[in-house]
Image (tube, rainbow, N blue to C red; front, side):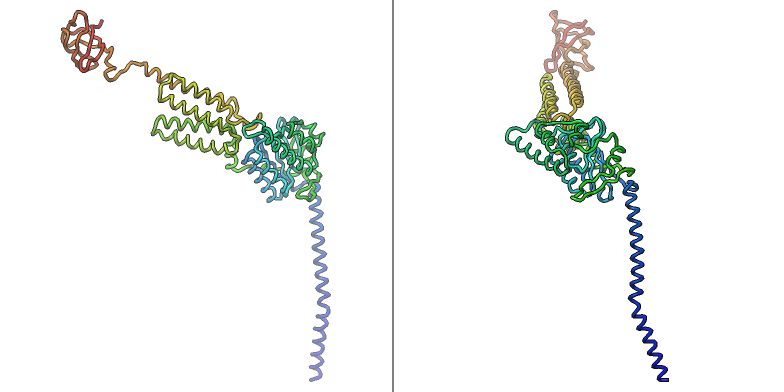
Length: 464
């Protein structure tokens, strides 16, 4: 029995040893099968991905539309659009651009964000008739791909001062040299025409789309967005130093919409809106000071002024223009309180016109107030104060109806005979009266006319 137990125990130990010996082999086989299965799955996924990449299917491209001057709100919207495109893993971000230029600080904020973007940024100067002038030229040079639609232009990138004039002497040379080195650096990085870029800065050169393409200022000319997507397909660009091939043919497009706050602020910083808010603000305060206690005009005026000053922080405001408009409002206020026969109003109108014209003195199309808006504001102001001054003049010439002055020229009736003293009934009241007739007496019941008032006695003459 002991022998059988020993043999049985030995057999069990041998079986266990055999299983332990072959366990690594089974494990290796299972791992190999699993690895092979994963490799097949990964290969299939890669093939599917490559197929999708080749057609653009399933890929999405964000489209951002920027119109008007480049200012801080524009830069904020641009940054948000790139952030969203990176977060959502978009194939690219297309920026449909139409700008006359803008602030250097905002332009550089936009370019900084483009240069570190993890998605390709395509600047597309569109629609036909659009332009990428001044700051827009720099942004187009910074983009991974720069494109234009027919009938557009690019260039005129000479820096100007906040008031709109040329920057003079040594400071002007420093600013131009800085701008030239900046745009040449961008041109070199993107493989575009650096010599023409320098010409655009120093001489204000500008090109239509056909010449821009021929001179390698831009990369593509496309009639519309679908044509641009077709032209972009298969193009390789450097994104953060790494080559990346664009697969845009057949890709879906998604229009990027700014937030309501950004849309509101972008409207406020429009030069025409900011100017109107500025004028309305002063009108509100003017009416409140003229009629204390009205409250509403003061509240509305204060809000409009604060919004206007917010907009002026992002616009090239000329302080002389601001002071001229403020001086005009002071003249209008004084003319309401004091009689100047319209001279103060005329001076206010001249000051308002001059201030409006130089308030925002950017170059052509850059942060300028429309002459139609200026003309409308001035016309309304002239008509309003002409009405106010005219009403005041008429009120002064109108005959007094109260007090002693109101009795002069009034008609009445002699209650008693005036020889030359007696009583008369005038203006619903009985008065002591004295006749001024050469004959002295005025009969009882005769009509009389008041000539003057001496204390409590009326000097009267006989009426007809």
